[in-house]
Image: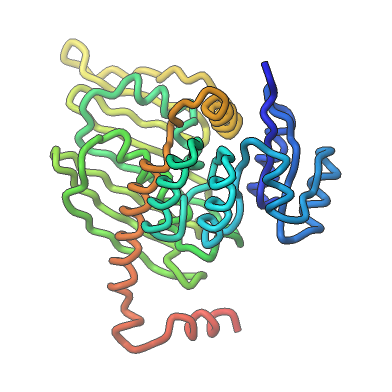
Amino acid sequence: MKNIRTGVVGTGHMGMNHVRIYSGLENSTLSAVHDIDTSSAEAAAKKYRTHAAESLEDFAARIDAATICTPTVTHYEVGKFLLERGKHLLIEKPIAQNSEHAHALHRIAQENGCVLQVGHIERFNPVLSALESKLSNPRFLEVTRLSPFPNRSTDIGVVLDLMIHDLEIVLHLVKSPVQSMDPVGIAVLSKGEDIANVRLRFENGCVANVTASRISNDRLRKIRVFQEDAYLSLDYQKQDGVMYRLVDGRIAREKVEIQKGDALERQLTSFLECARDGLTPKVSAKEAAVALDIALEITRQIEAADPRKERGIDPQILQAAREA
């Protein structure tokens, strides 16, 4: 089977993970990397024996499919450039900085016959496959994602940085339009919110409570689902889970069988299969754009309720004071 020429734009922390996996995947020939930081691209190219493209034009000429791992504000311009040249893309989440750009990328991909997948990696976590096999009619979901401060992705708040993973999953599992939302969030170390919570109510009556923090001492990625016949608790990080259900009038505890695996490797393998065979990706640009719409509205409501604005205090001034 013919190999696909692959590449990565953006050779920072996340981008290097994509470079590493592309270099070892079957049916992938890592053909180029590109970064505006030429020393970073050259270091990646040297380590993985590929070409450090000096420009996007040079990069596009050498690849068939690529990952974009650049800052969110650049996703639209870089994505548009490559899609218009017929390149299949996986864009790291969030798909774009705003809804207009997100939906535009979806349209451009369709017009050019390109696969456009978005890097909502938890959809490839074996935990989610196990959950879907047990899922019937979810009524309440409790989702928690905590991590230490990353010192990266601070151009966006925690909703677009972390919570968006869980928003996309919740939308996928519930399969009902959002009826209302009640978000709260606080900025601690960043200009945008570092801790956020939202309660989503869906038209089918389901409720989801989603929490994200990037200033925790611990790492935690859990989802709990309550449905009419069972309660499931699953850990994305440990890739394990349990289910409680009523059996003969008593509550029985069952271990959820999960075949552990590397979610990023599964994601990139699936992306290349879609690019090769023209399949619809598991997380399409359309689905990612809907998740982004919800995330942006949560962010808007959090910003609108920021008490610093009511007191006429510039958040940037407060941030500068914290850093002094």
